Length: 403
Image (cartoon, rainbow, N blue to C red; front, side, top):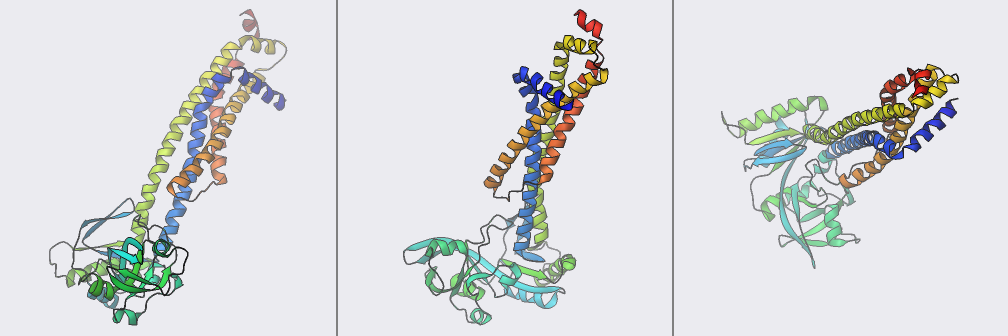
């Protein structure tokens, strides 16, 4: 019986293909938007989680000047030259709960290798940097504490720089010039990708901080201090201790801080919040589209009932029950929205693939998305088809046959 009704529903909808397709358009768009929202949302969560893990565990970033976080990006409002390596040492010695401290001075410079030339970020730091940032050499080694103390001209290339200057060749042991100063390449970092602020972590060269500040750039200050707390539970306490210590060391009194302290967790939360805006917009599109789709299906089914009054009368005259008539039109509504849901599901998968390729997020097509999409289309069919089906079941056979 059910099989016969479904076949009849398909025949009825095929008789008015254009009208049926227009009615299903809202359902198609709504289900498509739902699938895209779930896929993109899950992909965004995975991307943020992976970035958070790659940035370093329990990490605090102390920046010189006034810094804020917007959409997961670190925005520099004011610069300062008051942050020093002595501040970094004081944080490691005097703030409770600090596991590791890596001072950083970075600036852009021209790097040459025979005929190859690139402009990249030069990052001066210390040997604990790979452990603080969870960022280690893939080839060769990182520089040592002795090389930092000796202001040695050794360099560890980021993956992008290594590819640009040396191609497929092994750079370890080769020579380069940074600001015309000769350096020996001792290692190549693993490929890391972009960080939370959107900067390519592979487009940099790491050198000893003493070599960077004294030999290469001739400065007495640093830009950043990376601080790794011993536990996630005490990050906020460590941040408070750092602020109190630096405020006192810089003798600021009642003046505002000339530094900023942010945790990577705060940066990642802001990035996740920014990523969720897209999902919210898609959800709004899905809700509006499904509402429009439900109204369209309702209108089509009411029109179908009006056009098929005599058919309903004949069926009632030969013994069809009111429940049978109601169920017939309800099945037609469900078939219409189910077909729309299937098309929307296919379109949603296609668009999810496109979005993941464009924004660089993981492609996640969970079964949950497909299940929710089809359940929503079925629910839409029931809601939109129930009233027309009920109205069809009320038609009296004698009155219908007189028309």
